[in-house]
Length: 425
Image (tube, rainbow, N blue to C red; front, top):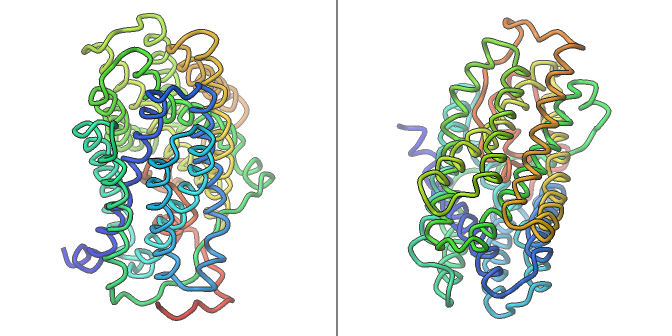
């Protein structure tokens, strides 16, 4: 309880940021579809988010070194607030694509600042607790944002203004916090050679999950609009998928602690393939069967990344967890950039349900790769594996999430602080 009190202001900032992000991410594809944006434009909105998010993960640490955490966080939240208000003023597909790049950049930057503060106030003994609380807060806040859209819909200006208020409200707790200035931020980096040498399947898994979830996260709401579902139903479906994946992480992760993690990845990926095929073939209406398919899909799609990171960590050299996990983030981001574009064209050619063809294809690729890797390499001995660690949605994981992860301490991660951090303010 004392740890929760200690980090309450930071958790509140994070919750408001995630509420805003959950609202923003659902408003754009649904409202854009209702405004008559092309499927390609809607896919590019998702691509814009990923471009901005990865760019922010790389660039914002350098900004923080120059102007400090509080100023950087305030700028990120303020610009994110401006982008969603500009979405309301300029209802045009290319304007939204451009603005989505900025919102992804700012969301990544703001999240990194909060995570670095959480890392600063956590010692080795409390970091696991802090990380678990943070994962829970991000899950519930993101879901709450989607539930707000279920209540308000996307028509008019109210949902845009509410999301903007959440963005700007996220500044207040950090602006008055007395927590010391954190160490410099951990930027993501890409060392494909190290990542592939450590775990070839980690490269395939990160890219495949990025393709599948980039397509689903951006265009599943558009699938719902094209099928004539209500905005509330779309919000419920998206939230159900995310919650199902979050709940499944723990039992599936614990199972992967006991058996070859690649077997678990293969089985879970095949569940994702099954859910996608069932949705395409049955093509259910707004009924219980559709909710079951989305829950089954989310169970697979939103638990795979954490298992893949755990598998890569099993083979990582001491001190290289951060490099391996950060490299996976960049590969994941490249998949998230391409997935919405490919899926939008599938929908254009074959209809709304064809969106699920992308997750089916890439979950299938992951399952086949896992099987082949089991033939080529023995599993890491159980005694050499670090216990599975649940993670936030891969869509919001940054370099600072990796630094906050308790496995970073276990691997002896050191953050380069050769450049002194600016004074608070």
